[in-house]
Length: 209
Image (cartoon, rainbow, N blue to C red; front, side, top):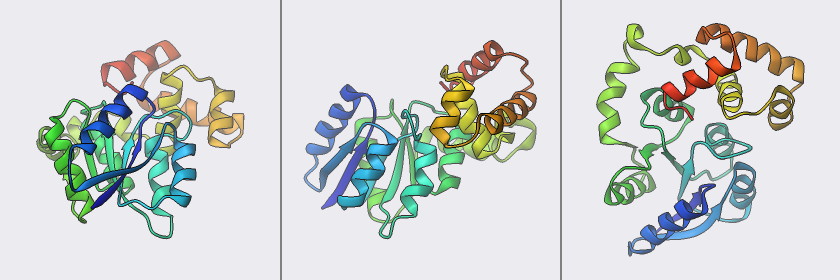
């Protein structure tokens, strides 16, 4: 029996995933979380084999949660579930230590396959993404500008794009406002944008929000 913890901030999506997993005789949902902090707290007292992790939860994002999950004494395998069928996002998640990456619009049967694969020690990448990753992530000429952002800059970029201000982000990431402002200046330079409106437009164009 593969024990699964579902971390997803949208209740309807979370309930749908739980029902889907409930139909499989070899899978069992042992817990759920609606944000990164709740997930990390739940993992302290609930043992599971796989964390199904939404990459864009409020607070501690999925991407930021990955290294913290892996730092646990008996870390579960991490299967990232994302709205983004974006090769760079998948590459970041896998580089951070996720065992798999599936998109929310993939076939339900494929999601169960993905859970089984990472739960038994394997790896899984959404088939439609796998081909694109080989080309997009590997070839420097076709890499988007946000591929050059550091993990911290990417975290700040995502939050700015979702409407958070510098002070909010400083609190969320436990950093000073000055540090966040520095990250903001650097990432805007790397993305070649000069205003928040342009930054949001860039994020939307690349399906990052």
